[in-house]
Structures are given as C-alpha cells and as structure tokens.
Length: 340
Ligand code: AHG
Ligand code: MN
Ligand code: MN
Image (cartoon, rainbow, N blue to C red; front, side):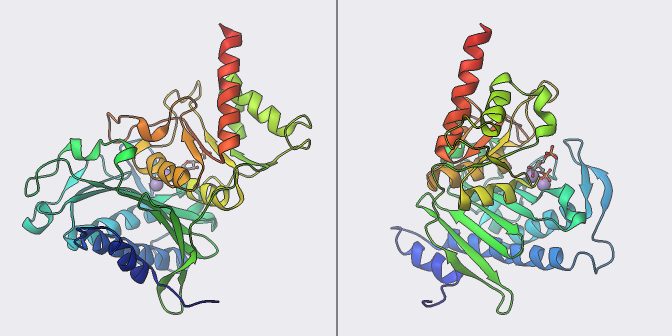
C-alpha cells in the first residue's frame, strides 16, 4: 500500500495542473467535503440522537414529504456554502426557489452549486445507504451582482465539477472535474477522505439491472422488452441477469460504477415527466458516468445536452454501462417502430 493521499492533497495537486487556477474551486470542494463529513457523522448516529429520524411534518415544492435528515443536510450544506465565500447562490431539492447569497463576499463568488442534500430519503429510517449529490457551475451573471435563474439553468455539459457522497458501509466521496473520476473513502479514525478508488472506470457491460419493477405495467413497451430480455436465457449472457434495486439513486449508481450495470427510472403513464430531477440528480451522475466510460440518456437523448427550463425539472433516466444503456435504447426504438 502506497502513501495515503488525502482529498485536500489531491485537490491541491490537481489545481496546479490548471493554468490560472486561483484556488477558489479547491476551497469550494474542501467546503463540500467538510459538509459531507458533518452529514456523515449525523447519519452514523441517527438512531441514537433525538429529533433526527422520521418525517419533518412538511412537504417540499415537489409535494414530497420531507424527512428530518433531508432538512438537516440541506441546512448544513447551505451554511457551509454561504460562509465559504466562493459561491454566489445555490439551488436544492428542498428549496422551492434558488437562494441568492447577498453578502458582498458571496456576491463576488464565481460559482453556483446545485444539490440533492439527501438522496434516498425513504431509506433513512431503515439504515440503508443514502447519499448527497452535487453539481458546480461557473455563474453566467456578472461577478458582484445577485445570482439569477439563468445561472442555475445551465446544460450538464457546462458542469465544472460533479460529485456525490455515499453514506454506505463506509462513507465515500466520488467526483469529477471532467478529467476522469476519483473516489475517496472517509477514514473515520483521522477524519479525512483518502484516495481509495483512483481513475474509476465503469465496466462496459454486466449482468446487473436496477429498476423499480413495481412500475413495469406503466412503462414504455421497450422497457418491458428490456426487462424481459434481462430475465431471459436468450440474452447476451445466455442466463438471466440479476436484479439489484436499492431505491437510493446514489447507492444504485455507485454499485453500477464499480461492478457495471444499468439504472432505469423512466417516464411512465402515471408519471409522464419521470421522477428524478435533471439538475441535481441526473446531470451530476451523468457527467460521472460519461467520465467513467458509461452513458446517461433519457431513453433517446444524452442527458448532458438537455437545456433545462425549470429548477426542479424531472426527466426519464437511464444510466450505467454503455452496452446496457445502448441495448435498452435500441429496444425502445424498435417498440416505437412496431407501434407506428
Ligand atoms: P430523494 O430521496 O432525493 O427524493 O430521491 C429518491 C429517488 C432516488 O434516490 C431513488 O432511486 C428513487 O427516488 C426511488 O424511487 P421509488 O421508491 O419510486 O423506486
Ligand atoms: Mn434524490
Ligand atoms: Mn433528496
């Protein structure tokens, strides 16, 4: 085992590879890592502390019941980013509108951050892996002014950094700056994220598929055909695939990143816009997927090319190993030709 490389060391080393880097992005990434450690600590002790598990008794703008940890994680992230000085505004799943940081230092910040503070809320109370997802963009509005909605509604291709934190059997932070994907495991004994998964690559194909099959009756016929393909002996492996669905996007994605696989959350006849949110769930993981050699589409189009029009925009989502995403897209196309 070689020398331990902490996340902070890694960020500084990478910064020197960019000409004209000022260190602002590095400081921002470090702030996110600190927020992640605080949330990780709260998640780890959740069953022991009063007032941390269970429903908050409120709903967010999307009509979803908020859990106490959703709100705690959201506040933690906002506090860290507001005080950091590199960020002029944020948008998150738990806030109806984006938040502009009004103090002078923040108004001079170059970056906006969009995030899902706690992903997999339904798994919080049952001790199953949950996560945080984040996306960083350079602002479009002039430095010094208040952040605008245009700063938030940028295409995924414009992301400067995309990452997630997984509160699993260990806590991991995985991120990309568009130059490969690296994963860091939190060593709780020293309180540092340490490089454990350098240059992560998603296998091109696998025998794993992840979708909520309870929705199969309301799915596109091409998706039904893909599920049947996975379950048959006539697929490319000659034996049925294994279904793996945790119900926490971050955890399902992370498994697929390491072992290969596909994650599907399509539009359905009952949810015609889909469930997952483009800006703070799909885009960041799409950039990571592509950087690791995988794909992310809405069934037809590349996720990163979609021009967002709304903060909480939903989209059908297919991400994972290249061959598997291509296969389901092919079956969707074929099913549409048949029905014409
Ligand atoms: P969130 O907890 O941030 O609202 O996201 C939940 C998402 C995602 O994490 C997960 O993959 C999906 O919802 C699960 O949905 P179903 O329970 O409908 O399968
Ligand atoms: Mn989520
Ligand atoms: Mn969430």
